[in-house]
Figure 1: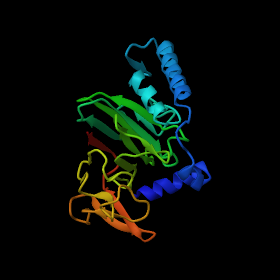
Figure 2 (figure 1 turned 60 degrees about the horizontal axis):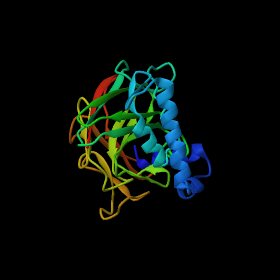
Figure 3 (figure 1 turned 180 degrees about the vertical axis):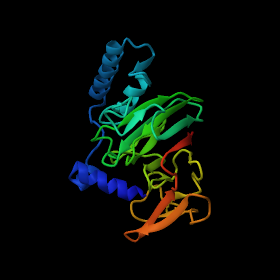
Figure 4 (figure 1 turned 90 degrees about the vertical axis):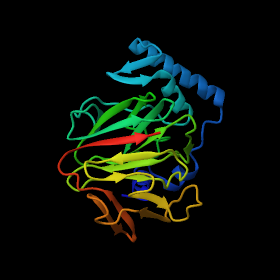
Length: 262
């Protein structure tokens, strides 16, 4: 799996790829935007009888976090489904494929998950946006065939060309599923480690990086680092369309993953 694969799919799905890459700027009128975002937060709070930290569909979602991510340019907060009936990714631990996200940072953060067509979160609402307080965790479930990526938004995280400029975790779940850490979007992003039952992908192992390590980000010139076949159980590396492909696979027909961020 590669950043450019997901990005290309997202561009095709949202249409006018070049325009999406370059023309989705932040709202010009910051005051008007702020007022609109505060209104959204107030409506959420009123609708759900919320206090400082809100419970929406049995999911902790801080109102201040919803305001913050909208201010940074997200099109909307996530669907935040709580069952497989309406989504391929949902909050809960009842799926065949689960991932528990552990926030090891000193501050609260927001986990953002999107599908294969949704990396341009300034134009398409993500599947999940969930607050994870410092030192706590949140578990999501994924359906067979679910594919996309996640990133964590910290206080210093911004959108660049409509995408979250941070370390990504990319996923495809199923018989031939694979997960990987991708640093292509931001080589200076926060730490991320994904543990499958038999393989680890982190900032140095089974990770997609820019070939030019001095680059902040890259689009085509990337490589899969330290993930040779047999280097660890589940590690696999190949090529697709002439570019590196792979990550941590061989997860069987179900798996419980753990992702550590901070």
